[in-house]
Image (tube, rainbow, N blue to C red; front, side, top):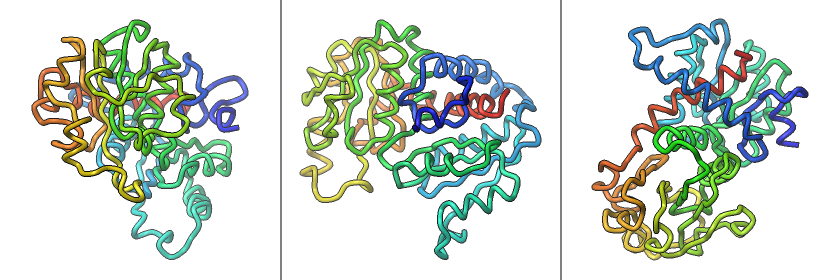
Length: 316
């Protein structure tokens, strides 16, 4: 249902809720469209009129810096009217339901909702109840999905490495709690990456990891051997219940990315991280700020990718 919900009857993108089940042609369309928007940020006048007259509502029920800000910048560069809803000061704090909040915002002539929520499936729920002319973008829901992060990661890899069909990619860290990891895995496999590895302690791997089509490693040196891309993940402490790790220091010792461990990857391997980074926990500053890091490029490309998603959803 969720896959059909994302597409119109003639196969166009209606909502972006998950990369799971979306065809390669849709992902490629978004990446190609994003490539055309990269140069907009380098112009003196950083705007195009594709969403002029449209109202985009950013509804974030969880804290965010990069995602919320880049969505706002992207919408404004498309000339949309942008409304950022402060959930702590909204009627949600008075007991209003999620669907009632959305219904009232829809009555304010919304055209698009960008939603981040701690509950998995929240964006799907909203998409099933909005009017036909409204599109919904999932900006992260629980442990489930973060499709625009997955797309901007795919864009970054394609920009620096070209074709996906010859790449080895390692995803390292807290896979269990990471919606980013799931979107990355779906994006990579859909676009033809032949080998996706996950490297993590057993306690930070989902039970269904064997069904995701990835190679599982528990040792950094073995898992990083000859990879082209290293994608680090943040420890999702806010989603953990009970002690799963002995300490942050112990995690860093075994699974933190250092210059020494990075030497097991290919010499021209790129290092990525969705942010926010815990320096000295999952990544060393020497690596994060080093010549192989493309972490800040991910943030920049995120604006173009989110512009592409919103313009496609708006029919442009």
